[in-house]
Amino acid sequence: MAEYVLENNILKVTVDSKGCEIRDVLCKTDNTHRMWNANPEGWKRVAPVLFPLIGKYKDNQSIYNGKVYEMGQHGFARDMEFTLVKHNDDMLVMRLESDENTKEKYPFDFALELEYHLIDNEIKEVYRVINKDNVMMHFSIGGHPAFVTPGNDASMAGCKIRFDADRITYHLIGDYQLMARDEYELPLINHEYTIQEDSFEKDAFIIEGGQAGTVSLVKNEKPFVTVKFDTPVFGLWSCKSKNVPFVCAAVCSVVSGRKGSTVPVHRAVVWKNRCHRFYRGA
Image (tube, rainbow, N blue to C red; front, side, top):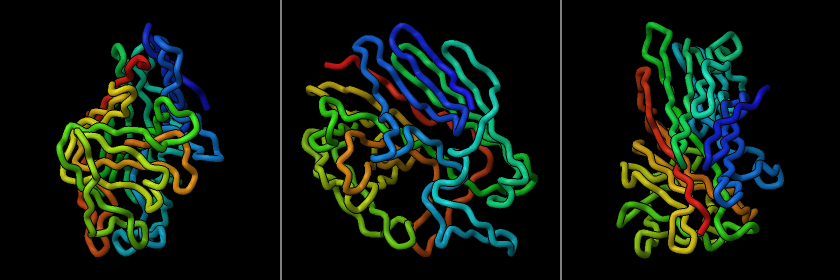
């Protein structure tokens, strides 16, 4: 296991080879750490990459060509060692390839490359999924970064989330950890939703249909951190019943599907999925 650093005069970003996970973002202009600290009493992760599954299968099982495969929630990439491809002060590329261990859980030959680019106060991410097989490959992929809530180091309550949309509807997690059919509307005021202590008692908010492309955590009416993305689905989440001082703004290409539905099928893709922009604390 190794750590790699991207750094300029604004940000210092630390990435772990395990899971190719961003573990820390230090904003040098105000000496603040913008990511959750992985305290296991709250949540032991910081910004895991979810592949080849987002969510979970019923009974953790899938069937392909008549064979049953078992794979846990959110897949295996977040717990595997990635191999270094390229690294300098403002760029990191790492790679994960299928092997006999992954094929016990997931039957396809693949390579997954993750790129991080540091540009001024932005971290841009590229996910590259390479199908090394000669058959259609089923997968989903996404990121799950946990950002500290600005202005409150004890609770997420009161944190404001700003959308580039007038209206946001969402679904909750239902039976077997699949997305429920019922739809709800976030109570927005001037494009903002204020998180309550019990906001995530029923788990994540799953927001479909490309309703927004920008989500910001707000401090003193100004963006504290902004996530830009081009995916049709994203989610908001924090730990149930713990009232921890972080909020996850997760983005994904495919979700596990509603009860009774079929997960969409995607060929190998290059997905320039999102950019994190960090602002000096107000």
